[in-house]
Image: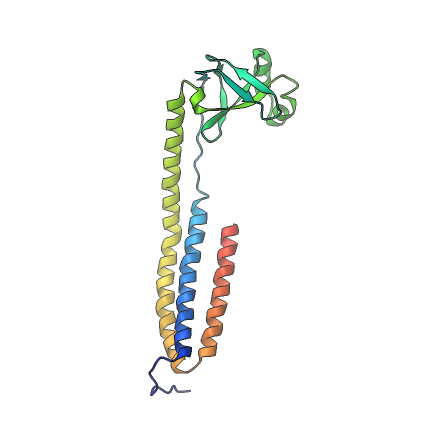
Length: 211
């Protein structure tokens, strides 16, 4: 089969073929960007409580137990042992009965969840501003946030660089084949290939983002 190269002007069908090609390439880049960004967001560093850390309340606070509607009043100068960061606040267990609290800490996680009320232990949450060690806690969180941003930036670059390379190759090959098949007047074939390509890119992007 030979092409009629005497007609070199750009027809509406040929223009549509190139528009579809650029749409496919744009979708490829955008899909790759979304997948790379979604993957990078899974790289998260969490703040850890330094071993043996105790926190001292700098002011009186009324805190609600996360397991009930009970409001617990904590007085300035109270010392607690936190067990987890929760955003810009600290989770800790509290009881006026120190012996009960020590026994509670020896239980496994399931028993702690089910026996807290029975043992008179409350699961509380207090903001950094409640503690003398506020600056130290903020520093720990700031360092972790910086580490997370660095990890995400690095992971995004690793995932997106191949997309750029493949996208450039796709564009170059696509331009050549679109020109050739347009000269052969195989416009319908080009339309079908481009539409299938869009569907494949969409499904692949959706699948990878869901993971």
